[in-house]
Image (cartoon, rainbow, N blue to C red; front, side, top):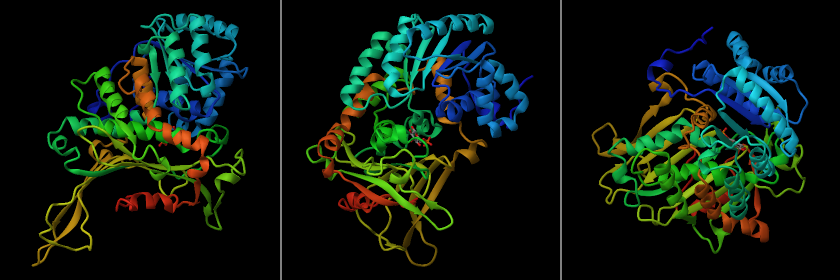
Length: 507
Ligand code: BG6
């Protein structure tokens, strides 16, 4: 039976590439990411008729489940999504298999190799394999070695490894990990995933900049006064304290998602739309980025940790009261940093990056604030006329807004700000795909454009090295300030910008 498509525009506007026969092997199949993001994304690809019929998904984890038990576990977790598409799910679940594997046990990885040969024959997947490491980062190096030793990634044309973030804990561990991974597989086989690059709106920054003539001439230090990049979440740490306690907002969000948004916003135009040309430009701009004050990093960064909040009917725990969190934890759940890019285009333009959990809104946006006009000829209806702003909304309500001044109606000559708006939803009649949909498809297609190359990952860690060293060696210089849950972070983060006479945008 053919899957139904809810919206005919999905076929009309989309131009999709065909994924070749494929076996996708997910390590960490009993984990959160698998049922929250990966399987739903694969099911979406199936509903969009983008999966080949010669296909298999092999879940791997230590639990001794059978194929059927795995299917049942996944179905129970995806109840809502499945109940709207029961028939399609029944067909899709024929692609699901399970093999108990401990990645640290070479014998078990070898057993997996023989199971994969059987599945390859049964599903006619032509020997094409994509291995997805959705396991603890401690197992990335050992996992790649085990795959190599069991001969599973021998053929660079037929096998790939997708590696989740965080890739390393700092610059030197990322370099070490790169060396190990590259000794097991060719760089062309390695797909370091950052799901923000899969978001339609992050990719749209490239199109907005390089498919229009009007933006590029003003996309530089001559016209732009500052850029703010925000990713805020309403949720707290949930049940991920085990991972988050040793990660914190710097390693969880700033070094990867926010820094990738910075790279796409600030990179030079590539010579052509080619994976390496794009990644060269991203790597170059990251290599030119530095903290605004590398000698005194505490002056250009603020850390915070959420405290209690909410109201009497729904009180919210503070971070230190969350399950699995050390009651004296100093892990940051909020971080703001000021970064400069030392190149011709951006010299002197501050980039302010912030991210936090338990903030008032779920939001991702990039705000380009333009310089003030040289002479104010007109009175403004507000005391301080607002400068032009281009706001790129990454999520939710994906789209863009341009703020500019117009004449206020009436006999005087007053100006007031108005906005012009573009919304993906309204223009295309469908919400954009989850980042994982695009990235899973790209990894199986072997297209590395939206994945981070080794030099990019290293440059992104290097950028934050002074902060990481400070947090490790003299943490008292960069304290984690408390902020009430559901507020916009600690007041110190406002002061970081106030010093430059700037305010965070309050969306
Ligand atoms: C993940 C982080 O990479 O991104 C999470 O580990 C965070 O802590 C998530 O919640 C945010 O992603 P999104 O797509 O919901 O903004």
